[in-house]
Amino acid sequence: MRMRELLMVAGAILVVLTASPAAMAWTPPDARERFGLLVAESQKADDALHPLRLAERGLPPTGAVFVDPQSEAFARQLATNKRAELSGLAGIDRAALGEKDQIAYDAFRYQAEQALGDIDSGIHAIRNLVPLNASFGLHVEFPDYLSGVRFKTVEDYERGLAQMEGFAGYMDSTVDRLEQGMAQGYHQPKVVVNNVLGQVEAFLKLPVEENPFYSPVTRFPDTIGAADRARLAAAYRRIIERRTTPAYERWRTFLRDRYLPVATEGAGLWAMKDGARVYASLLVQHTTTTMSAQQIHQIGLSEVARIRAAMEQARQATGFDGDLPAFFEHVRTGPEFYYSKPEDLIGHFERIEKKVWERMPELFSRRPRAAFELRPLPALGDQRGTGYYRAGPPDASEPGVLFFNMAMLNTRPIPTLETLQLHEGVPGHHYQISLVQEDESLPDLLRFGQVPATAYTEGWGLYAESLGQELGMFSDPYQWFGHLDMEMLRAVRLVVDTGLHALQWDRQRAIDYMLANTSMAPRDVAVEIDRYITNPGQACAYKVGELKFQELRRRATERLGPDFDIRRFHDQVLDTGALPLDVLEAKIDRWLMSGEAAQ
Image (cartoon, rainbow, N blue to C red; front, side):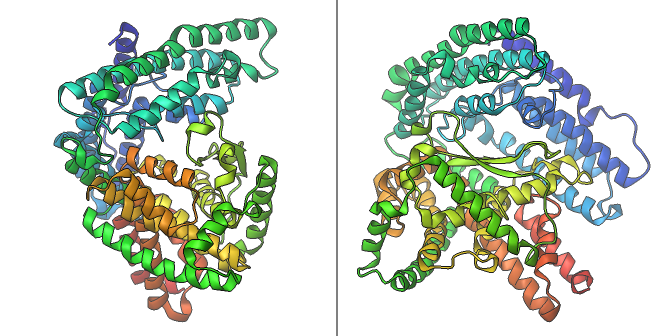
């Protein structure tokens, strides 16, 4: 490691050790106080290992401004932190806690056990030897962060420079880890390497003035004077030219000349050494269940058959003269189903959101303060997927944003936009995340989604889509078909993700299966399949989570009968933030048994 990296990691570890749960010497007498202190101290330790998370929340880092999340030092400190958390929990009587604290206790223990299990089993170390991720890798996410961050002070800008220096070190050390993986027989698929190479090439073509790393100095606040502006702009240009751009150039040379020739031909984890173990761990992480790949595959096949029958009914309702495959092609290719201008798509989203809010009080009792916006994806749109949602700060001073890939307007049919807004905006991710972020009574691990619970967050997004008819959406057969098309996508994911990584499907078979069951455009399908290849297991979380929300709603409806109130049910599943599915189910069962649900 470079000397700067060593100093940064050492500084981070020093902060973590001083903030670690193990460092607590005084124990308050009350169980709730002890638990609250444990969570708070553990949060400090976690923040020191993830300084960019603090930055995204508008807070200064508690230690180093950038910590390499794939370093050995990071893994060792993470293990120390999680052992300390479990030790602290063992000394707290769960039964002496209140209801919400018990839920937090269960979620806290779950995330500590899962993280420690991955480290002790060696899975964490294996994954760090194959770190390329075309969807969520830091080589694309860190530039996105700098593209959108709003620095307010000179100190913020100086910190940004230090973050860029740390990022350049991370880029160099990633090459070292890939070298170590090659030496130990671990290789990623050629399709992943080629996709990352495409992103690197696109990044290197950008002039400095259009480089996302230069973005902060294109929007100085009025409080920063001319002299500081000139100095900082020169410093940002210098670090781009001398550190970050050369780091991307080194990636290009290494990936093209050394790594690509030995990358695996097979697209899935089955083709990688220890791949079956890694995939099983990732399924547990993302679904928060213990279902096997084969079980998830079968659920997917069943859901595909059910939704396909509903799509056939929707096709007939449109009056289209042709079979379902012909209808798919009609939607894929009809220019009337696509916007050509970003402003038209943004306007459509705003109209949908306004219409949804008119009916929200029928299903929900609360409204977050934060606004919701749709914005273009900041960088490398032609090398990225459809986009992603990013929550605003907890004080609601900035909106939550859906970053949409405007380079892919011709692959997002207008009939799917109502469903997309329900999933990403209201009552989906923006609504759910904003509500808990704005609730200062919650511990940070629940308030800011520190518990690994992809199945909850994405399951809620998909469940939110299913509320469309109750919210006045899908009023014509094309919009209803668009909803089914989106639901089909999530069902297909169960089939193709497990097919790719456990059942030895090749990439083309997965593409063909998705094309046969959705109206998605071929390029969009290829982008989706490559996302599942680069990020195994994550796509399974959506449908698995949604099915659990639907199951809990049916259970509550049957148990409560005429006393069932959908608004109170939604309060219960939302008011403690993202939870592992077992913890969520136990919470709802206790609520139903308590008698409070029928009041």
